[in-house]
Amino acid sequence: MKNNIRDYLLVILGALIQAVGLRLFFIPANLASGGVSGVAQLINYLTGWQIGLMILIGNIPLFALGWRYLGGKKFIFRTALAVATFSFFVDALTYFLPAKGITDDILLNALYGAVVSGIGFGIVYRGQGTSGGSDILARILNRWRGVPISQSYMIVDSAVILTAGFVFGWKEALYALIALYVSGIVTETAAQGLGVVRTALIITEQPEAVSQKIFEVLDRGVTLLPAKGAYTGAERTMLYCVVTRTETMRLKHIVNDADPHAFMVIGQAHEALGEGFAPLDEE
Image 1 (cartoon, one colour):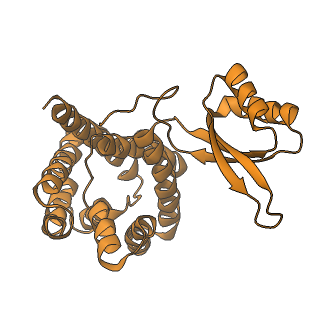
Image 2 (cartoon, one colour):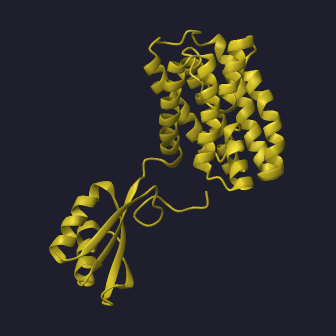
Image 3 (cartoon, helix red, strand yellow):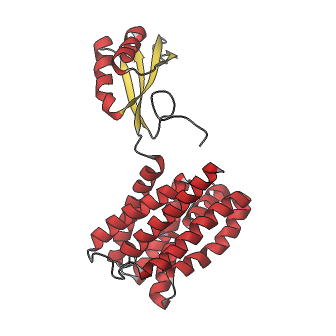
């Protein structure tokens, strides 16, 4: 129950931040935000109908699809909470925020709108919620036709922004594409945190020496994996370890000092959980 309450509060907070980004930056600059929100902006521009109300109405048929394809009651409740609060805040904030925003610079509106909205999206995802709209359509395309989630988002949001080009103008549509890209990066960062780490695979003839140096200097764990060269057939030992970004250069020096002939591949992981990093729990 405690975790559920925390998640619901995160969803509400994220929806509020999203609404601020939309109302303070995107709407004054005629920048379509993509998804149902972008469609609602177009309808508002053409008819004057309230954007928040249009967002709520536009998500109703998507709720039915989400119930059918994406998980029933739990999915619908969290999505309904996110959409309902977001819709409410979008219309309610008209009484508290300036109608013309805080700047008439379209680039600033695109960038700051993307950052603020991205933070809101990320917080909603941290609360294990979704923002409805293109979220639902993207997941349905993934389930129904096997379209990757990232491509599904691109298809849905790009279609909305393309339509906005005919209504708001092509300059605004181009800036909206920039905002869409930046928002995606910020969303991922806000949802997953800044805990990007580096993973290293090290193939060496001196596994004990390299491992011992990593223990002593970096105080990091190492996993030993047997490996065999496909071309030479030589038996080697491969080391696997995870370090922070700031430790990467020291790891290179450690491996070079212990075995100058070692082969090392360094990759990037979004998150490391467990001993030496963030705690691993069921949340």
